Each structure stands twice: as C-alpha cells, then as structure tokens.
Amino acid sequence: MSEDLAVALSATRGIVCLVGAGGKKTTMYALARAHPGRVLLSSTSHMYEYDRDKVDIALTLADPTEPLPDFTQHRVVAIAAATDTRKRVGGLEAQQIQNIYAKGHFDLCIIKADGARARWIKSPGPHEPLIPAFANTVVPVVSAQVIGRNLDDRIAHRPERLTDLLGIKLGETITPQHLSDLLSHPEGSLKGVGEAEVIPLINMVDSDDLHALARELAIVALAQTDRISRIVLASMRDERLVEIVDR
Picture 1 (tube, helix red, strand yellow):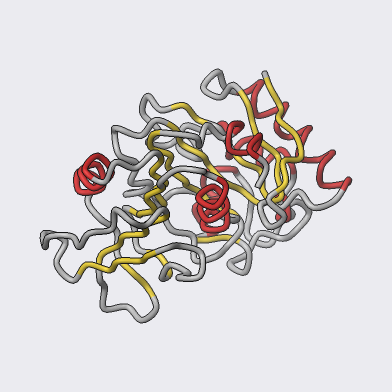
Picture 2 (spheres, one colour):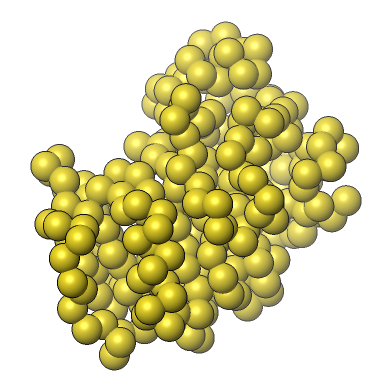
C-alpha cells in the first residue's frame, strides 16, 4: 500500500479506530502490511476471525485476564477474546487493549470499534461504536458502491437505522447526499468520536464515475460539519489512494 494512504489516514503511529461499513478489515490488514514497524490489531466488538495469512500471529484469549504469551518476535499481532459464536471472536475491553499496546511496545494499534456483518453502509446502534477515549484517530468507513443502489439489508447493516437518521425509506435509492449526511451527522459517522481526529474513508472508489460522485459528496460533507478537515477516497482492495479532499 502507498505510504501516502497511511499518512492520509493518520495511521503511522498511535491508536486508530475503524468504524462504519464497507471495508474495515480490508483497511486494517492493508495498513498493517504497509507499516514498517510493529502493529497491534484488536477489536472492542465481535467480528469474524482474523485471517491468519494476513497477520504474523493471531491470539484468541479464552480468559481475557490470563497472561499473554511472548509475541515480541512478531511484527503484526492480532488479539481477540474467545466467543461461542462459530467463526467469530469477541472484543476486548478498551483498557486491556491499551495495556497490551503499551507493554508490547507497538508502533501502531488498529482497533475495529463496531460491526457491520460485511455490509457496505451502516449507522451506529444505541451502544455503538465502542471507541476508546484514548483513540488518536477515528476512520469512519463507507463504500462508494452503495450510491445508486436501493437501501436494503443486502448492502446495509440494520438499514432501518439509516431510514431514521437520513430520512430515506427502505427500497429507496441511496444518493450522494445521503452519504454526505451520514459522514457529517453527530449520530452517524461522528458518533462517539470524542476528541480524536476524524478522517472518513470513502472506500471502493473503483471507477471514474464513482470518483466524481465521491469527490462531490465529500465536498458537501465537509461543508456540513467543522469536525472533519479531510476525507480520503480510496480503493483498499487495490491499496490505492484515489484522492484527498481537503476543506
């Protein structure tokens, strides 16, 4: 992945939290692969199991209070809690992640702070996202591929929450304005971000047409809130930075 993309997302050091839908795990793995130092991957919410081909070691803790094995020889370390759900792992408490990050002498920690069931768009639930107060950067993710598609549960996680937030009905077409509103809404992509820097990622910008639409919606989103200073357009599947839209 281009180093410029990691810099654009402020993912070169500290604690980075990924929220939203449309490629959080792809982004997590790409940033870890691009970073030259030691990277901790973890989650505060349930998620699908880590892909062991994309990390150096994946630890699933049956007892989150148990002593950790020595992982200092590994560069990319993924740590989760055990869960009874097949092919899924549980999240860790924020303080535990902070302790592991500090004691393990990692350069970067990437936290998946909510779930989306592999969908492309979502609005946070009542108890989401689980962003630690010590997060340096929050990256809300949404897929450009939802533009022009009908809102339903095939592309949206809990689509009824989007109807409440954005004033769109189930089955209606998702427009660029809907994404602008989601990215700039205090109960949407800005929910729970605290004092962290917020850098939205519009992912899956895989064509010139989507690039143009994503650029325009990013400009509108920036005009609707002072909380965001830039929005990154990318294709994380190709690990490619498309454009940085600044205020």
